[in-house]
Image (cartoon, rainbow, N blue to C red; front, side, top):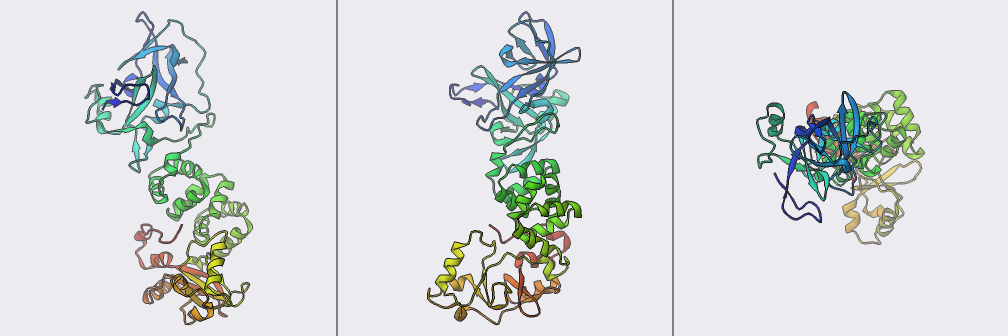
Length: 431
């Protein structure tokens, strides 16, 4: 596949393509044609502002000694070798600097994310092209044709329409797993995807890569993404994050989901992360972690909205709009006699609230014959009750009627499904 008009000063004509795999191990020659070194790798520094990464230089070897040749010393490259402008070489040993990536070592045969395709792919080869005198990375070949070319020389170095190639601008790589080298990857393209798409990609990555991707997201997007993953995968990712960052993300998650994720971590690790959370969120999560998993208390959330009975519809809506942090679930409002003890007097659906006249008192609008569960009820019984009465949420009350939490339908219905189906169920309620 030819590359056309990639750069502003490049005519819209096909640029000659060279393949990384056929250059690696090739000769580096001086202006007279004599071999002076062997080409081992290409050095690039990814820049989000530059869709097609520029090659900074070559990594060369002479008798197993690794050297660096800046691109400015290279006259040109063809399909199998590089030609220098001068016979003189700087013999200083090569050392990779922070922010640098080696195409053969860090990208070739590694996993990348295809942003447009919303999938994880393998870099079977890498296409490069010279534009404006600069060698740039332009594409990643993911087809079997590339592997056959590399393994058996079955196909030539000439690009073909049969070559399945993704533009370098549409892929994202991962940081270098080397404690001596730091490569910060922004993952801006991935951050623009829907959390469900990001979660599917994370499921195809290693734990290290998944944690790197989540760490690059803002707290809210990271939280939404983690909520789409299984509890086991959530725990794996949280373990791979800095504890302060993990705490920040958990604060943006539903308290029930955060509690389940922390429950999968070793106790000492979970407590350490908990201590780094803000006090209010920490106590909500800690309270939920105290309940048995196989109980209504173990599957409920404390993310709900309560209102006093003396409000009118207009006042209740105004209070809702003024909330700094709104609950993820807003299908019902719970009318309580005391906002400290939260004894439930009735339930108002958001639909009824919106359709009622503004001056209507909540105590006239609320339903006081609502269904509820107790903390010890079995999740399967709760799910059946919700299914029988077509409820999307069920309040969980103490013996004296005080609200402890609510069970939403997405958490309840899991208990009516076979075990291997539960992880496939999407979260219905969220931001």
